[in-house]
Amino acid sequence: MYDYLDGILGKEYSFKELGRHIIIQYTPQRMSVDFEVQTPTKNKVVITGYIKNIRTNRPISNASIFDRNALLSTLTDQNGYFELDVKKRSNLIAVNVSKEAFRDTSVMVIFPIEAKIGDKKTRDYGYFEGYEEDHGLYRSFWGRVFLSPAQKIQSMNLGGMFLYSPYQISMTPGLSTHGFIRSQIVNKFSINIIGGSTAGVKGMELGGVFNMNQYDMQGMQMAGVFNAVGGNVRGVQLAGVGNRVFGEMKGLQMAGVFNGVGGNVSGVQIAGVGNHVVGQVKGLQIAGVFNKADTVRGVQIAGVVNLTKDASGTVQLASILNHSESTVGNQLAGLANKAKKVKGIQLAGIVNIADSSDYPIGLLNFIKNGEKSLSIAINEDSYLGLQFRSGGRVLYSILSINRALDGNRPDKYAFEAGLGAVLINRTKFSLRTEIATRNYLTEKFKSLDNHQSSLRVIPAFKLSERMSIFVAPSLNYAERDENSIYGGSTLWKAWRRDRTRNTFYGGGMAGLMLKL
Image (cartoon, rainbow, N blue to C red; front, side, top):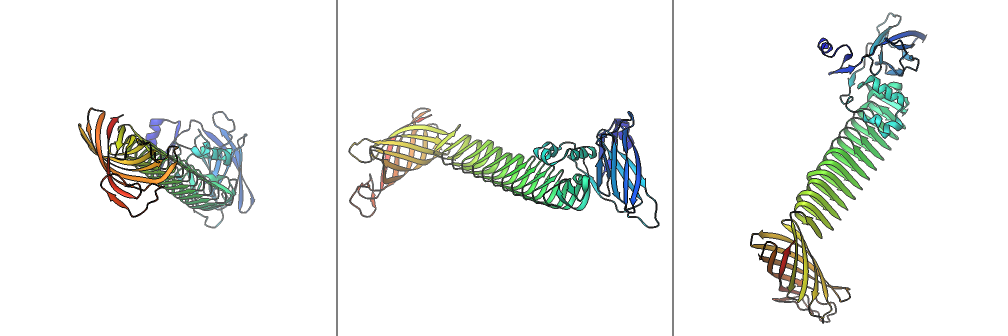
């Protein structure tokens, strides 16, 4: 395989095997290593030396020198000089040298041989598959503030390679039991007193203030303030303030303020203020203020607003606004809903807006291919009214203002709101049913205490494509006039109400309807 790749790509590329991966790197440069070994104590070895460019003989700065088994690492200075303290565990160690654009070099260091069996234990290592595609943590705000330039250089030199360790303890990212190579180690258990930076977690990580992982986190991660993960999260992520994941998240993510994910989410997101997902959400989003995602398949619940490009099959609930740029399943909002196509119900306190929505419920509904009409009608109680109907092809809302033709009455005006449904809609005939409630006002527009509720059936005959005439029978319940001195039980009447008693009665209205 190596001969085949070498023949295709040439000598300027290098190949190395990491686990199940073959890593191909462009490495046109070569380096030389000159070193010395000092043994100041029986169990300690100090390796010093210089790294140079073979072609130019110039020193190479910021090259990574590391012992993979001992989890030790350092960088060369501007003169190419390095110094690596190694705890002597055996008579033979491999010192690895890496630098971006240079071919990796390994140097075998042999110590004086003692008459005993050395420790042959080696550490597992792996490779982060997404390294070449994205390394967003170092380019982010979190990386600029909490990671040193030396750590970034170390990461570039070693590429996506990382080592495994059972545990680590750190005070800050610079004070760790793993020393300078800490950012290239995946731990099973990690404790960061203030904060720490590692390659990743496969188990549990606890941080007093923050946790930062260069690659993936699998298991549980908890921090007093924030968690930042450069790769993917599989498991549970909890933070007092915020969680930031640059890859995908599967599991549970909870934060006191904000959750942000650069890929897809499969699971549950809960935030005190907001959730923001660049990709798709499959599951549940709950936020005190807002939820925002590219695509949602599940449920969005927000204290203020839900925003998404596509939410087919999704339920959106918000106290103020739901907005889907494309399709949505159901929308429920205290103020307004907006979508291109609604497959289910739109329920809003004020207004629904959509290109297509058959079941909108709100005071106003602006549906592109739905119902919009004005009608003028007179009812059995001599009120002349102007009604505005707006909605979808099935459900619509009614708003009406009415004036009594008889001037000698306290309830001079009436305001009506209700909900209607289109039962039949043919070329020459339509049939609707409506429920409505009416509030009465005095001549000075003071609200009266008596109200009326109505159930109407409206057969309409179309005079033209836009004009219809209708006569609508109704069943009504009206409360007696508030200034009436006569009481008594509820009365049933066939026609018109009794103003002195609460009345169930038959009524009707007739008028003209204009399609807008």
